[in-house]
Picture (cartoon, rainbow, N blue to C red):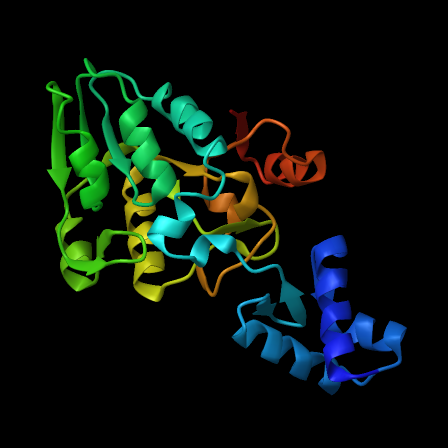
Length: 251
């Protein structure tokens, strides 16, 4: 089998089964495990999958640019945002993450809401300009342009002393085995720190992020309290979340 044919086969298996286990696949195809692993490494360099220990998982499309991600699941994200906005009660302190769905959440908050919003996303802060009764605290630091959020040591230091009732986390990927992952190391550290300072962590996850993986782990799946997903999500995947003790909110 030619290299190109092997790679096409690997990608087809990944689409159909949702994962590749190198040892099992090498036995079923009669190929060496080293050959399978080499092909997986090359496909990962092309951004076509995410390498994990023992095999591969689908790569998250959420690692594209901010502008490109705004066009992905454009109809689904507002529904998730509305469901998240409905969870915010007057008087609460809420941390809103960065990302395209988080911007939609900021837009969905009632204009007369009395609460405090902490965010490290300039994009989210700008959306709250006309919410006259909202106190907005903007965390600064090095701008990570991919997600348009502050990150790095200064941003982490600014979190000291802050506590939130709710943290609405945006993610690149959510997978039963890989956990909650993202494409940048500093961003993963920032999300983990915010979650540790929040009473409840709710993940905003449009359909294309489910069952995929990114390079840097934020936390295991069990560390979050709820996930807001689009209605019609695969039942098996939703069951994995529920079995982990996570509330599944359909939008």
